Amino acid sequence: MEALMPIITQLIAGAVGGNVAGAALKQAAVSVIVRTIVGAIGGVGGGMLLQLLGGEAGLSGLVANGIGGLAGGGVLTAIVGAVLGKKAA
Image (cartoon, rainbow, N blue to C red; front, side, top):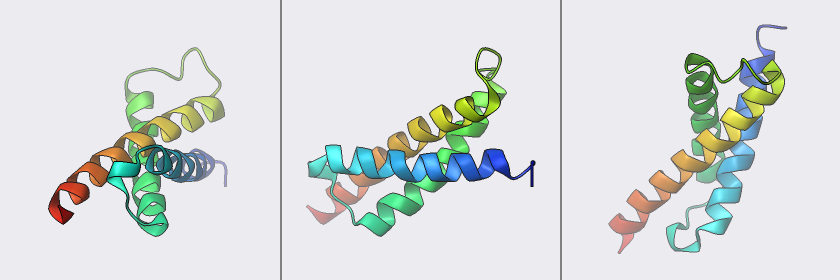
């Protein structure tokens, strides 16, 4: 279970970050389900990227996974929202 905790943290933080970014960027509006799924995927990617870059050195592991998840989820949701927004226009 301890090995799954970072991934679960990244998924949840990414989903939250994706929904926050989607709500903030009204011009890139996508559904809540899409924001949550894309945010969760981005959260795992952002958390792993932060670990690869060594960002976990100054923070505790759980906090670093949360921050990486929030940032990764928000960024990926903004990118997907912009791409889908251009296709709809």
